[in-house]
Length: 79
Image (cartoon, rainbow, N blue to C red; front, top):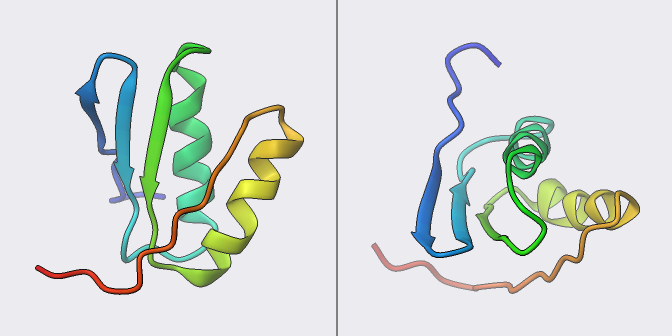
């Protein structure tokens, strides 16, 4: 993962955002796992992903580790 940095943004108290758009597996899952290590139980992590395999694979992987996950699909991004 050289050259790829974890960019965890604090949005509000107990709310963090991790943008992993443009990254392919396994990097999004690795970055999500790293971000969760330092978070408290009451914290919420919003992850922005544009890689379909990551969208499919990350939620079940988190649930196997005891986390609660929810996927919200957004069809279009306007920038």
